[in-house]
Amino acid sequence: MGSVQGGLKMSVLVLSCGRTGTNMLLEILRGSPELEATPMAEDKQVVRRGQLVYENYLSKCDTVYIDNVEQVSAFLDNNPKMKILWTIRDPRDMALSKIYRGQPGHEGPSYGLADDATHQGCLEDIEWMKQVYVHITENYPERIKLIKMEDIILEFHDTVKEVCQFCEIPYNENMNNFIGRYRTVQKGWRYKTLDKSQVGLYKRKYQIYDEFFADWRKCKVDVAALFEDLRPYSEFFGYNHATLPSIQKKDATVNYKGHDIKFYDLFASGN
Image 1 (cartoon, rainbow, N blue to C red):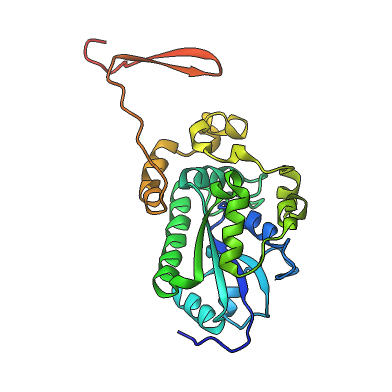
Image 2 (image 1 turned 90 degrees about the vertical axis):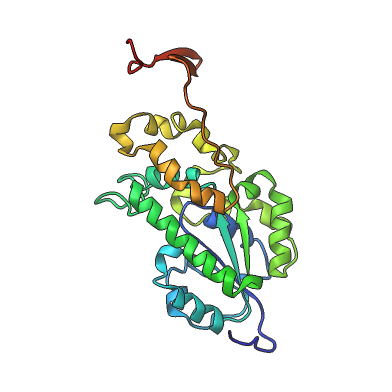
């Protein structure tokens, strides 16, 4: 590991995979006069370059732009005062957002699906994110802090103050006004306030995104199977991933949009 260079001031990189709140945390921290954000909203190549960044540097990068953990080590060794803020989100909510936003015409590429907008692509993206996270926590544990997107939304002030303490910067009231600072066009248009509806999307999976996941022909993903494959990641990052109880009777009634709908087990013996 590289030794700390005397007099070098702290720098901050918000890092994780997409759809975990990296942009939100970045824009919050842009309210600090102690940090100097990069002109571009995301410094995609910063880890790949592996070079010494300027003092008080602030930016974000997604793990998809990291090729191997050796790049991570080289980057952190060359930047001994770099702090890593690692955002995470309930993997089920993360996956739903990846699949929906990654559709052509949404925020995905115009020519087709985003790489992480399929069952397998989503799992691979989250698995690689976890591998990079584990590498940093095992080798640079004092330089990384995990921040849950849900905590930013539901416990804003306490969470941001903890982030500031970790980054060794004072909390600034201007951090509260981050919504108007979004430089990503889609986010600036979409969010006008701190959106608490982004928490627990998986509980309303058939209602969110204009009922996109209610029609398999649109999403083309077996959401239940994907959620089960995401279970190890939910448990690893401290999210409750309880399984819904199986139906024990021959019929069950659920409420959907205020209407009671009865389902019958057509495969039960005698039917």
